[in-house]
Length: 120
Image 1 (cartoon, rainbow, N blue to C red):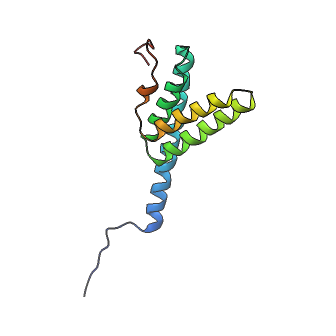
Image 2 (image 1 turned 135 degrees about the horizontal axis):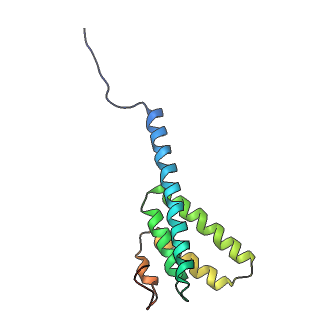
Image 3 (image 1 turned 180 degrees about the horizontal axis):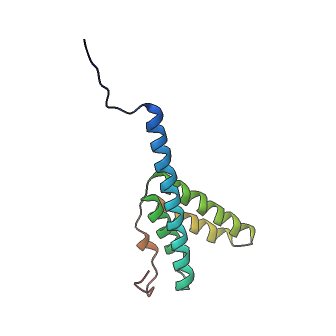
């Protein structure tokens, strides 16, 4: 008698686990984006918006593909809404550049303005 044991999980179980991780990362990424937004409002520091865009996207993307996806969706929606409200095309382009910089793993401090309190 030959007994064969397979320690690998079935593909469907692997898929469910990956989907759960993606969702967990997306929720965490949305929280990261919201925290960056709250800090930006609290700081109320002129010229710091690009830093907070980059930081929120950076933190979210570090969680994994789900976090990066959430950051992109939220960033694109925010920029779309700002564009609809009459914000300048140049500002939107610069915001999206900072968003992508953060999502791709770039250091958000590149956008950090001098004088921004170290709390942020």
